[in-house]
Length: 465
Image (cartoon, rainbow, N blue to C red; front, side):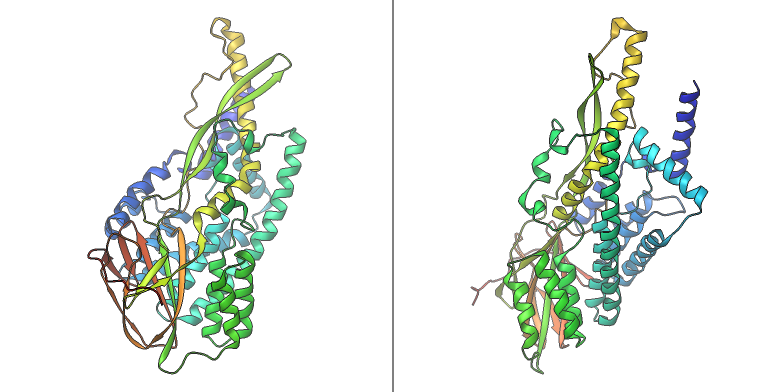
């Protein structure tokens, strides 16, 4: 009786600590929001974000999603303001040192809550790749309006955040390994019957150095430093990008070009950044976990695990059309691959928490079997409405990032969105020595700088020279 009362009080505490997290269907909320983005309705998408976040104390995801939508609108600086709020929340949590009693209470409540119920009881801290891509997107947002100094500040934040994440991850993996050994847990994600293991073992996922560093982030750093005349700082950025994505001629050429003369007075060094699609959804799948209670009794408990569902709506592409000429694009980043690698790295900790819940459910079923032997079952029969994986993730973050770098004459140019059923030409004026153009494609809608274009009539394309 006392144990049951303790768990009841603990559950109440964790729900209070986490607000409404356990009751939100975030995947469903953001599917509605993204449906508006797929047809170019930014205001409709923004209205839904506000509708789904009625409480005064907004969480990190609210600012991440709002910033991404507003950055595509006619007021991109409002998007940057929302992202600044998100960045400040991340920074405060990185830097915060709670008092001993509150730290113990919060950590104990969160850890026990996730073990007894699910991971949705934790306050959303953001995945490592989201934190890194946040400052990367902030820097890109400023580069397209020619604020290279502002971009430099956010690039520095990116580097500092990566270093902090590396230290935290090392400690976390050691703790999880020690806990698994202490609890005698030997389950690997490959042992989960019915789990889509192949997604976590895809070559593009395994080849990543980790789940949070992006070759695009470091290439963008190199370009920014180069534009500011700091070539000694540009070189490390390009080298780091090469280390993360080896054997890409595009990256190797950027490093070699640092020894070449800059563009002529009537030319501009133009970086075209194409970001397509949406970050993958995070869904929940039930997996049967056999729990051995003694030598003669094994009870199977259905436990939820997260899975990633990639965006399959936005068309793939490999080129951009500039002034009627096809230009190849180089893929530098895939948020889908980063999210899968992060999930792959997180699975030991997720399994550890899931095994605790599986044991609790199996013990409960064994007790039911003793009370009602006529209805005894070797499978947990009680439906737990809270048994669901955490589906929260930054959904409006762009998935693929592809780039092209050109020397263009200063003046007017026409740009056409890539590999869609048709494109409406986008008129651009290039007038600076270094320029960054950011085009975002979602489904068959393209957004550039602060204007929206619906892809319509095809543009003439000539062969690549």
